[in-house]
Length: 393
Image (cartoon, rainbow, N blue to C red):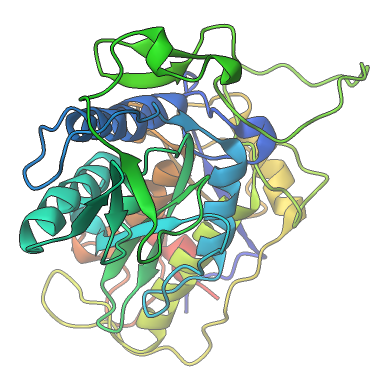
């Protein structure tokens, strides 16, 4: 049978130049480029189209705010997704409207999902003969829709998160979920005030709140002297903590499971375990196919993996050095993967790519352990070695 390493060491090399997580100190996970270019930019462009009357079936508006990012709302979206499955929608909040979209993960990025969410506004407005009623220069909802929450004039902030889940057909689905700083729209609520086609001067915006008019978009935005990101308040008391220097950037975020380890977070730990145990379950049930078309035999002693903080500590110390190949002691089984930030732009995508690479080799390598599932000397140092590390008990 296969050799049985004491425990599995999961060590993924993350590129030394990693995207900056905008709300990292507040538990956020999305990087600044994704937030600005793939969420806020298209959202504000859509709101500009709406307020200027460029969307069919929707009247021009008088005042609409340019949306800013909120770390608190990003965390709220993350928390809602923690209790979400492919069969269970994110839990709503009476004080914060939620908008979500589910799509096959293989063809879903933040950009494509945000674009789909926004295009649904046009489709929704066109599909309803009279989606709005206009009274006292206010556009009011007659058929509340999550899409309409994104074009609410009084909305100023948003925060989003995403997660993957396996549906009943064992297909990985991606859920993209956003929370706003306004309550969910109800029948008869004002969506935005009409008409005028957006702001023309600063006088059209709320000077008391520090707003000015962005004449290019027709949206009211906070002046440059106003802090653009809302986040969790933290103490400014100086500390003298010494942090070891290293050439790369490590994950931040919620870190309860292994609180003494700096450089990993609970989301990535869970993703590692879920991906491995899902594949180990398939293997134990005889559902893993070889290049020949035959399936590996069912397993009788496959154990569900648990996370080990001591092994994680060793893995963190190794990736701090940004190695380019697998190094270190040979006491524990060890796998290694690296990729440029142009391919894996987030820590989560790096985790997913690594686990996928380690497991998929069995479907491509004809020199594997064979139907007797025996690891031999000839397999040492070959690609199949990474697979045998993650499949052993």
